[in-house]
Length: 203
Ligand SMILES: Cc1cc2nc3c(=O)[nH]c(=O)nc-3n(C[C@H](O)[C@H](O)[C@H](O)COP(=O)(O)O)c2cc1C
Image 1 (cartoon, protein in one colour):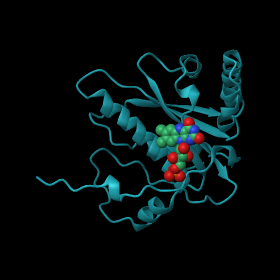
Image 2 (cartoon, helix red, strand yellow; image 1 turned 30 degrees about the horizontal axis):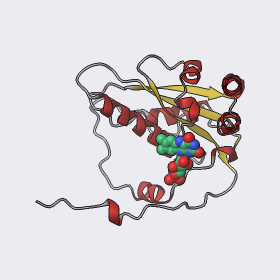
Image 3 (cartoon, protein in one colour; image 1 turned 120 degrees about the horizontal axis):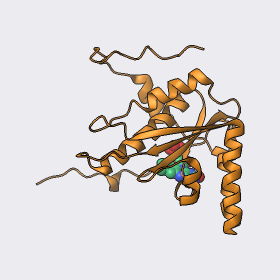
Image 4 (cartoon, protein in one colour; image 1 turned 90 degrees about the vertical axis):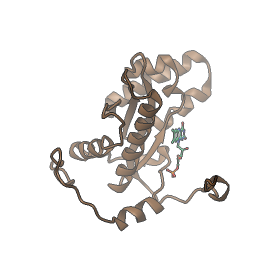
């Protein structure tokens, strides 16, 4: 299986510097897919490699790559969900188990872990970079023709659940990007009125 992307540019290579109207159209119309509607097939191995390559091509102050990925698929994802199910049962809150459907139904989940490095770059900026990685991954999956959704839910915040995922001291889950095949065209959701959100600064 070969990559559908151009070869990764060498360090220092001159890159395209041109308008990309197709990208603008995509950004103007793209929509996340409800996670529980995501079906097989998931990206294959080379598609996943392409998606991760694009996800990691994120603005990153200090070039620290302060994030990492955990791929969950097939029987392994089912085993992960079963461990979370057991945790949910032990908490005696039925809503926790119900929320796992968004993780169980899609054929693939990519957990993006924010993993800030010590040093001069503010942690906030490293966390923002992890958010960009999630966004890149979501948009790339949609642009590849898959359905996708970025979710967090309780298991991104619960210490026992993040331990099952392998999240280490100082790390946080930026999100699970759920990927599969959308069964129907998405419907537009409400979008914010930009008027109250935009001001031009004047002295
Ligand atoms: C950081 C973050 C966390 C989210 N967590 C959840 C979640 O826990 N459960 C959920 O149903 N959707 C979650 N969402 C997804 C949104 O509810 C919604 O699907 C998404 O914003 C759809 O917008 P779009 O179509 O413009 O992509 C989350 C989104 C973001 C950015």
